[in-house]
Image (cartoon, rainbow, N blue to C red; front, side, top):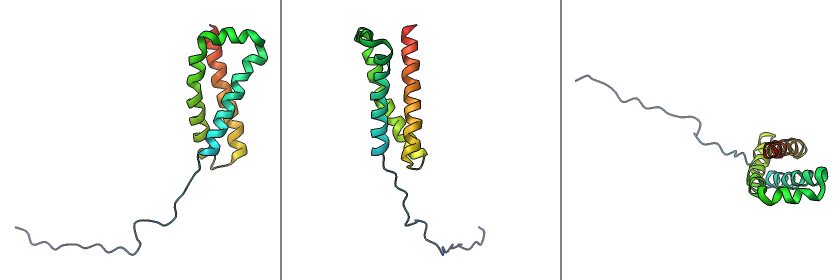
Length: 108
């Protein structure tokens, strides 16, 4: 058997740090929900009251975009380091593009 010694490592710094980085997801969730509401209103502005007949059969698709929009709002708000103005603009553009793609896909 070999003659070995136990090696002890002493730490001068603690492993845990006292600074915690917190991001609040509520502003991002609110921005995502408002972006979903605004994007839902765009077909009504373009096609008027005939949009209700279109939504009669396709409402589950647009309703499924609600949690996606909220998660996009939260993710973009945290990616932008809590800068509300930038996250509002990017979330509106992203959710609007999602609605546009879904609307065009359903129209055929």
